[in-house]
Length: 339
Image (cartoon, rainbow, N blue to C red; front, side, top):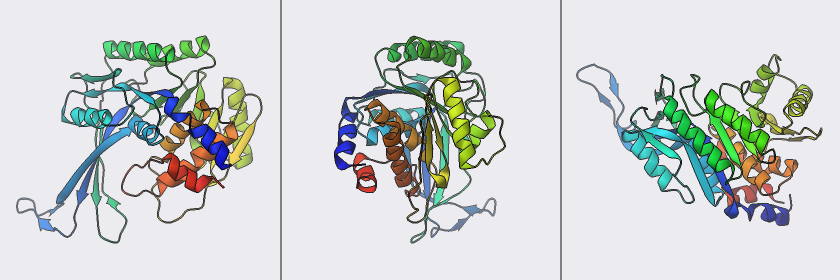
C-alpha cells in the first residue's frame, strides 16, 4: 500500500461515526511483585502482593479501544454495566476516552458488571505471567425491559450512524447484550438498509445471526459449515466464498499465523499473509483489533484488499503488546504497513 493511499483512507477516520453493540466488560489487571514474598499465617498458602491495579474496557470495549486509537470521530457503545464498583470503573474509563458517547450505555442495578480480573506476576526482565483469571458474569437472562431499551438504541443509531459492530462475548446465550430479540431487530435493519455495514463476531459462533458481514476465525468457519477443523487454505477460501454468496455479505476469516482472508458475494477472495513475529507475543485482543480496523477502513472507502492489509498490520502490532489487551494507532500501522 502506498503512503498516499493509506493517508487517503485514514484521513477520513475523524469524520466516521461507529456504534459498538455488545458485551462490554472491565479488564482489571492486578500487578503482583514476586519479590514481596509472604506466607499467610492463617492458611500457610503463598500470598500474592498486588502493587498496582489498572483497569480498562474489555470485551466489546477492546474494539472500542482500537477505534479510539484510530481517532474515530464519534463512537457509540451500546450495552450495559451493573450499578456497582466495577460498573463505575468501566463507565469512568469509557467516559475518559475521546470521541466516546455514552447516550446508549446503561448502568443497571439488575445486572452485574462483566469483569475479567487478571492477576499478573511482573518479574524484571521477563514477560508478564498471567495467573488464573477471576471472572464475574451474569448467569440469568437479560431482563426483557433491558433488551427493549437496547433494541431501541440500535434502531435509532442505525439511521444516524454507519456502521454497526456486533460483539457477542458471553458464554451463556441470552445473558448478555446480543439476544435473539436484538438479532431480530438487526435482521430487519439489514433488510431495510442493505447498504449499511454491520459486522458481527461471536465467541459462540455466528450460526443464529442474520445476513450481515461475518468476521470469524477458521475454526468457527469450519464448525459453521459442518467441516472438521483445521481446514487447508484452499478449502477455507471455498467455504468462505460459499458463505458470502449465501449471506450476500462479505465474510472475513482470521487465520492466526497464516494471516487473514476475505470473501465477497461477487466471488472476490483475497488472502493477506501474516507479518513475521518480532519477539514474544500475546494473541489476546488481536481479533478485536481486526474487527475495528476492518470496520473503519471499509467505512472510509478501502477496498477489500486494502482493509485486509490494514487489519492484518493492526493485529501484528497488538500481539506484540504483552501484559495488556493492546491497540494499534494509525501511526503504528503506517510504520509497519506502508512502503
